[in-house]
Image (cartoon, rainbow, N blue to C red; front, side, top):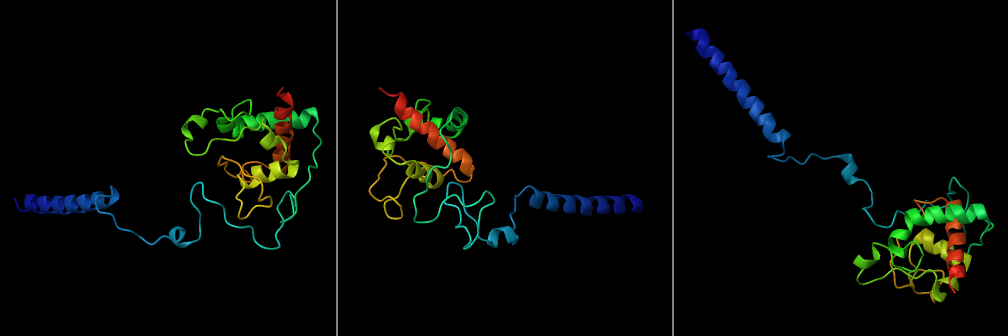
Length: 183
């Protein structure tokens, strides 16, 4: 009988320990532990990335100099345009549409700021460098833009982390064909 009472006591203590661990394991009682990932600098989703360190050069080389409009180093040949077409359909067509008129599947949900019509004159009068910078940094902001007189109605996210420098120039070459295709 004494052994039975000791066994019940041991099981009761074990049950309490397992129950206590389960409460903490399943976040019934949340203990906020200090994690070093929480106290370091970071940026959230759809937030501008941190600035590039001064005097640094990207792995691909310098894409453009700050304050100077870049020039298109990629010839608009069939290879560049077909790559630009593929990249445009992956990264841009959701808002701008396959034909570039700003009627993509997401455009219906953008109430305040509609995507730009890339076939229209407002986009086609831009230089290749201006289009490249729009793809790189997102929609121009008149306060900190190289081109304060250019204004778009849309709110395009920056694609500098999604597309390499060469891929952005391929998209620029493809956007030029969108304007040429219109009557």
